[in-house]
Image (tube, rainbow, N blue to C red; front, side, top):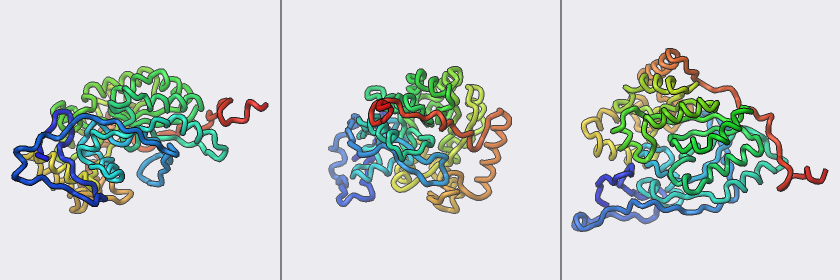
Amino acid sequence: MPNEPIPGRGTSRNPAGRFATLTRALSPDLADECPEPAAATELLPELSKSILCQNNSPDVPFRQSINPYRGCEHGCVYCYARPAHAYVDLSPGLDFETKIFFKPDAANLLRKSFNRPAYRVSTISLGANTDPYQPAERRLGITREILTVMAEYRHPVAIVTKSALVERDLDLLSDLARDNLIRVLISVTSLDDDLKRSLEPRAASPARRLKTIRHLSQAGVPVGALIAPVIPGLNEHELDRLVEAVARAGADHAAYILLRLPWEVRDLFVDWLETHRPLRAKRVMNLLRQFRHGRDNDPCFGSRMRGEGTLAELLGQRFTQACRRNNLATGDRPSLNIGAFWRPPGGHSQMPLF
């Protein structure tokens, strides 16, 4: 399809996934006659047998997670989750933003998991892959149903989002916070509205995300900031100002992640650079390679999140010093409470027999 930007979408490209057995290309003779790609969102139910995903990566501080959605309407062009759409024979490009799979039975599946005698409690990360508060959540409410189950069972949960919609569930979050069962990370990428509009077209504005941090903090919900991704030559210069801004808003801790470009994400991001920041495109990629030993991406545990080399060390030191100046904690946070977990009477519980 013609590579023209689509308002409200991170990319207009729709390349075939790496597992596709058939690919299609537009003939140059037909390019002028071809209509623009459809940009409407399609919601597709995904029936699952289980809801908990297990993790053994040493780079992330959780053992299990739940993803209410596959694909994300926020349209962040850099999203590392885009390649997951290739597993269902769809494109990591425009398909990822417009064909959103949702799990209608998520809450019931979670109750079944909690009711199993062999279940062992550990913090569940909600939305580790795609945002649990993306626009579809406003209509479907699956994330709220999951949080309702968490509150019923007094189960610890951590949330990562860049959406102000998380404020809708302040009642549940405040309830969980009273027993040290909740932690929220608000992802903040830039304070530049113009950059945000093209890089993360349907996510909340920078000012709105800072306001969300403030509202969560005032409600007694532990909230931190995830400054991600840090993109050398594009938003890296904002690092100190971002740390200061989230601290003033009420965040109590912060973390950062260097831009990752796995699989198809690399070509989509380069295309975005050449479309929206053509004068910076080569510089951004050259700088990124200096963090990755000359490569566009590094899949190795231990280095993929931060990079390696002199520039990576300097970036880490800048971040640490900025957090110290603003009294923000870094590193692993204290564990959430696993001792409050219980199984309410009913369902598969045997308590009613007594």
